[in-house]
Image (cartoon, rainbow, N blue to C red):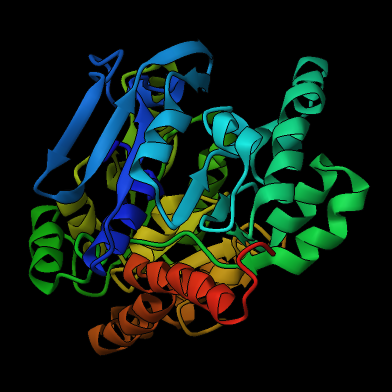
Length: 398
């Protein structure tokens, strides 16, 4: 679903652009969380599709049964067998969809990569309830156990992913996780996210933002667990401390729901209320423009929008925890703060490092470094190299 920005879309496009034949097998169903972004489309149409922006075939399979974001498709194994790929890349192990592939496993000619993005910020693991615990024990554990057993490599998207995976699977599989785990990261599509100087000027002019003003941005689905209120309080405190320097805050991802309306009322109590701009979800071109116009990106939790903002060379401020600290090279493309230390960290950036944040040559250097580490074209190459490495070492059945 390009509208949502899930990484499968862009990773598939990057692999296809390398000249590999590729098919994406997915369902005709939209997850409950995504319906807020695509409100008028309960289901995608079943069938085979091609799109000029995504030059590979998408096969949407009929959903047999579904519960929340979990679903079982009709004919997944049959369609995969008909395509007969050398590599099967599995995404979303815990969503049940890949179960037919997990059940059958690989063979001599099939290499299985499983992409895992579980991290410590995921609410299901941070705040376990009895219902969620039972679901994880009875269903998720079985799926992840099978995935570890049949995969040639597990592609781990955060340093915390291995730790969480070991909580889910049987203890006797822990050594195998250590053996076949490959540390990678989610990334960004460089065709959509790059620094745009002209758009920086246009956006800042539109809001009458002065050259020396500091613009902060957060882009995420605005929900109560994202820590937005805390960020607002910190920015307001710093603004009072440095009244000579105007601070702006773009909040991107607002919805017409109760929380977004509450947040708008909450903002009114701050001295910076007229410089806090809540914006709805937007297309990548517009998002790129707002990132380009901003100076500091702030996130409390892991989000794909962090990497996408980094594609524009945006300097990011993140908490030093294992869901996101792999993204930052300290004092290069961003900085990390310890829990509870965001006030001092952001204050130092705004009061002492604003000239660096405004230096567009420095920003271009950050953009290039981030491209080398997180562009999906480079991540795609690294995944294909895992297959080549196994072929050369005669270990496709690792």
